Amino acid sequence: MRGLAVIATRMLLAHAASTESKIEEMMELETDGKEKDAFGSCLDEYRDAIDKLNDALDNLNSKLYDEAVTLMEKVFDAAEICEEAFLEVQEGSSPLASEDRNYGRLASLALALAKSIE
Image 1 (cartoon, one colour):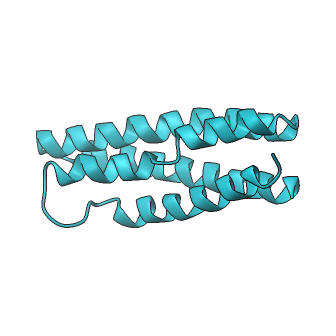
Image 2 (image 1 turned 180 degrees about the horizontal axis):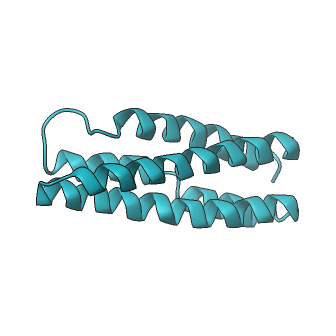
Image 3 (image 1 turned 45 degrees about the vertical axis):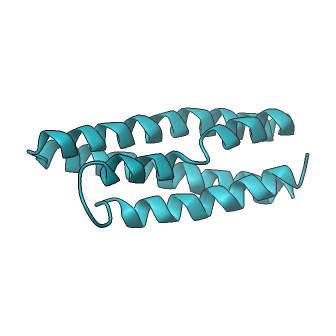
C-alpha cells in the first residue's frame, strides 16, 4: 500500500507544480488588481502545498506515516481556498476551476492511501 501512496502523492505533487506554473503565467497577464490578488492567494496555497507534499513524500519513503498524513491534511484544502479567493472577486467559476477540481480528487486519493498504511 505504501507504494500506491507514494505514487499518488507524486501525482498530486506534479499536478500542484503544474498548477503553480499556470498560475504564474496567468498572473503575469492579469491586469485587474483584485483578480491578480486572487491569483496571488492561489499561488501561495499551491507553493505551500508543494513544500509540504515534498516533505510528506520524504516521510512516506522513510515510513513515517503519521507525519506524512499530518502534512497531507494541512494542504488538503489548498484548491478549495484558491476557489474561495476567486469567489470574492468574480461570479461563476474561477479560471483555475479544472485544476482545483483535479487537485481535490488527487488529494483525496493520496490522503486515503496514506491513511490506510498508518
